[in-house]
Length: 195
Image (cartoon, rainbow, N blue to C red; front, side, top):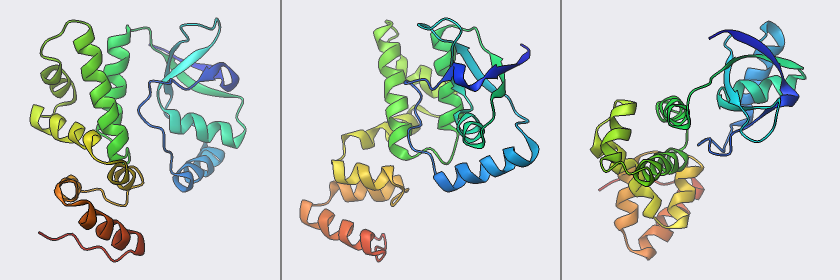
């Protein structure tokens, strides 16, 4: 694989990309770094499946966004020509291993990958996903479990106000009244997780 300079205008985000929230402060820090020293690590793209001459981001969307914010006209990129399964594996590994991907984005992406593999006739999809990211099936099951929680609890996880899965699980198992009380304390910054 070789690194190419690709026009930023010819690159689009992949709608299947798990990350939807980008910390604006961290993005600005990255933009400042790129402004000073440029982009040293190329992003990975694939040929756009519907638009000739265009590409979709496989990995490196933060670098892409920061470069765009700085006003760069092109960005170093590696054009990946693997099949959809391999592209999803790359996205899965890159994003699930990241600490700054919020719990809901992580869970949705894991679940989408499991569902995709099942749709392809793969019976052991959960095991397959767990192996591809170097985690146990229990870890994957536990992470996707939060998608069954109430919208209020999902919002706490999505916004990072609660990052601990055990705390989310305990809140989910609490009565609606206790959940409302806990959410109120969280919003005031007074919540302390305890048994």
